[in-house]
Amino acid sequence: MASHNGNGDGWHTSHATTERLKASIFRIPRWTKFVVTIDMQRAEASCFRHGSRTRERMRSGTRRRLVTGIGPALAGLSLAVAATLSATAHAEAAVCGDGEVEVGEQCDDGNTVSGDCCSALCLFESNGSPCDDGDPCTTGATCSAGVCGSGTAHTCPLCEACDGAGGCASAPRTTCRLPVLSDGASIVIRNRTNDERDHIVWKWRRGTATAMDDFGDPVATDTYGLCIFDELSGTPSLLFASTVPPGRTCNSRPCWKAVGTSCFKYRNGTTEPDGITKILLNAGEDGRARIVVKGKGPLLGVPTLPLPLPARVQLQAENGQCWEAIYSTAGVKKNDAEQFKGKGGVAPSARP
Image 1 (cartoon, one colour):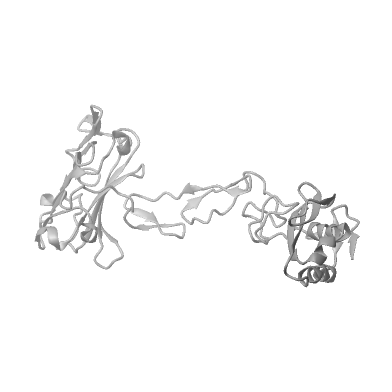
Image 2 (tube, rainbow, N blue to C red; image 1 turned 120 degrees about the vertical axis):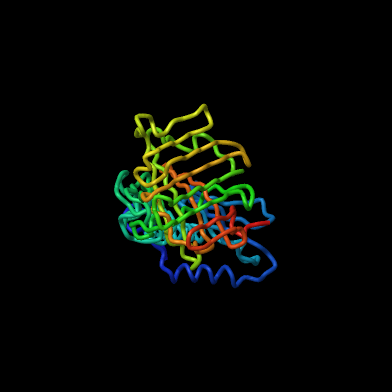
C-alpha cells in the first residue's frame, strides 16, 4: 500500500504492492489494450482504454510513466490504482552516482567522488575549483558549471613532446605540414673529420599551403628548431637538434626580418648559438610554400653518418606549427660515413 513519507518529497510504495499491481495488469487476456499514463511533470494522471473516448484524470506526482496492459478487465481500472502507480513513480528517489540526472541533482557523472566538478552529492562544484581533465599533458584545469575545462598544455622544448606522465621526452610532432610531392624535400648532411667543414642544407619545396601567420613572429617571440629523428626501430629517437632564438642582432643587424607580406629571413654569419646560418620561410598556396634551412661548423653538431632510415626531419616553431619530410631508402642518393644526400616527402606507405 502507499503512504506519505512525511518529508514533503512524495510517497513511498512498497515493492510488493508495486509487483502485485503489475501482476494484476499483465494477467489480463490479450485482446484489448488499455493504457495508464501518469504525467508527473504536469502533475496529472490519465486512465483510458484504447479506442475509448472516456478519460479520467487525477492530480499526482512529478514524473511520466506509461503502463500498457491487455484485456477488457483493465477497462475498469480505478483511479485508485492510477494514484498508486503515480505515487510509486514519485517515490523512486534520486540515486547519486547512477549516471542519470534526477530530481534534486544538478549533475551525475556515474560516481560519488568529488574533485571532478560533480560532487559526491551530485551537485556542481564551485566554478574555478581545480579538477583533472584526464589529459596528463595539461595543467591548471578548473571547473565551470559542473564541467572540467581544458587545462593549459604542458610546454616542452622544441624537438620534445609531452611523455604522457607530465614530463617531456624527445619525440616528433604529429601534425606537421608535408610537401605535396613524395620527393618534394631534399637534404644534404656532411660530417667531416674537420668539424669546420660540417654542413647541413634542408630544402622543403612545393609544400602544403602555409600562411604568413602560420610562421608566428620569429622577429620577436617564436623560437625555431630543426630536428632529425631516427624511426628505424619504430620508436622515434632524436639524432639532431639545432635551435634558432627569435630577435637578436647578428653582425650589428637584426638576425630575423620580415620581407614583404609573405616571407621571413634569418641570417647569422657567426653560426651562434647552434650553427644555423640561414632560414627562409616563404608562405604560399599548396605547392608554392617553401622553406630552406642551412647550417655549418662545429656548433652544428651534425648527426653520425650513415643516417639510419627511415628518418624524419622537422622544422618546429614555438607557436606549435611545424613542417616535415620523411626520408627512406627509396630516395637516397648517398649515405655513407661522411655524407647523406636524398629526397623525401610523405612516408612511403602514404604515397598513392
